[in-house]
Length: 232
Ligand SMILES: [Zn+2]
Ligand SMILES: [Zn+2]
Image (cartoon, protein in one colour):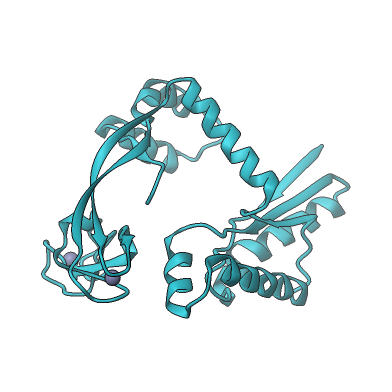
């Protein structure tokens, strides 16, 4: 039998801590070695995730280009993997040509099949930094508990999920000034169109645990939401 062993892709915004190594990278390596000892043919792959707002924020704060930051962190992660003797057949990164081309092909296919639509959203914008402020770029007062350090995606105090526009007294996390509201076009993946198909597939699955089955079926019953797939 042939196996593909993967692990979660470490975020390239800072040196990974011991928990990152133990929880996904090391366990993948242990499993891979076990399979090889049993005589199976395996390939083990993962890579550094170089995209997302935490990387952009960190780079801005350090006065670096995001690519400069991820170049540095990617090399650090590779050195750490070597130090722990964790052996990937391919440890790559999201900003390589193969990955970019593959992701574009997948999204083009989904778009051509009619599962992506666009609509206009209101977003917070910092005129000083000339930047739209998604989730972690904006802090303010939580409308649920009144905590003043809530982030645009979640309040750390009460745990409630937030939209940046929910925050009272919002501030830009870079310059601390009050942002303005701008209307922009965004693309969404039409997840609700898959509700019936997903429901049937999860229900008949023989490999999913009862716990994850019930959790997922409950989510579908409550109504799936379209997922935003673009950002400013
Ligand atoms: Zn709160
Ligand atoms: Zn700002």
